Image (tube, rainbow, N blue to C red; front, side, top):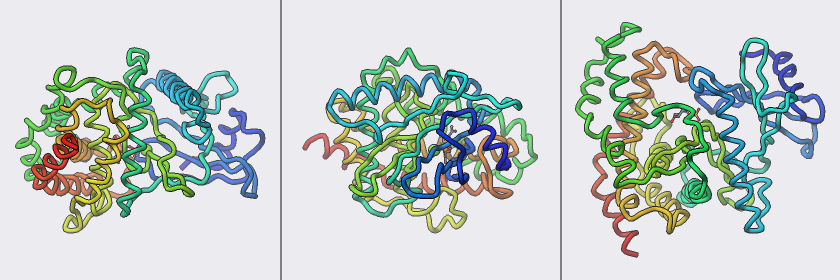
Length: 368
Ligand code: GN1
Ligand code: MG
């Protein structure tokens, strides 16, 4: 926990037009440390988001912020070109007093600030199909607006982030190393992953060939798209740390993995974990409509594979971190990563049972 005065000291390096009157930690993310800064007591006072970038996950925060600067400028221009006010549609970076997008504290912590998007919600769970369809529109539109962005300008902020074949090798190396002495207790789980080795290569092997490499978000959790409180429409895609070349299937798949699950990502009681087909259909319709003319037929046909691969990836990443001794994801209690891994494994079996039905649904969308 970072103390209040240290946060204010960091905040003073950004032009916020004053000193915050209140600081609130926002705890939804698993990687960065995030605060909301309130500049006044009343509702009209501006608010900001101040974040310390996790430099274990993101080794080059300078390039990361350059990426975000480029991507937000591109999206802003694309709204302006259509005569749409971009103010609440794209993250607004507040530069630091050194003239760059990043402030480095004396301990080496890397900080950035954004304007807080008002009157919008980042949902951690969604039950309404209409709202989840909107999330699909939001992530789909994000990808569409970046379709003409020159990918070579982007630094890969986490190399091989969704290279699931490589993630499998990393997992096996962690099993081999057994750094925290936990391998013996999870033999069944390890077998679950080794029996799915082929699944983990199924998108990677097609990428750059049958499946195009695109500029994608790569972390499309439900709480990374803001929904406008007044209109119920998707407003703004946030958490742009992992915008890099990738596959449309991963963005689609990760969003459905998280949002169509009937329980939390870290639900300990796996009997509560199911896969909601109504939510799947709603998101898919939203995503496909917002990417119309951009996605190829092959991508649309293979969308359900994205759900299975990303669910397996997350299950395996949580398990890898458990075996490594909890060094990557923030954890709230002992064994949290194991609980997360088991929840995602259960979800994957639910997803696998519905693959044929999902393939039939996307095939139907193509024929419409
Ligand atoms: C991390 O911090 P957050 O919640 O936006 C992670 C994602 C995972 C997610 C699982 C850079 O995202 O890949 O899907 O946790 N981000 C990174 O909850 O590893
Ligand atoms: Mg996030």
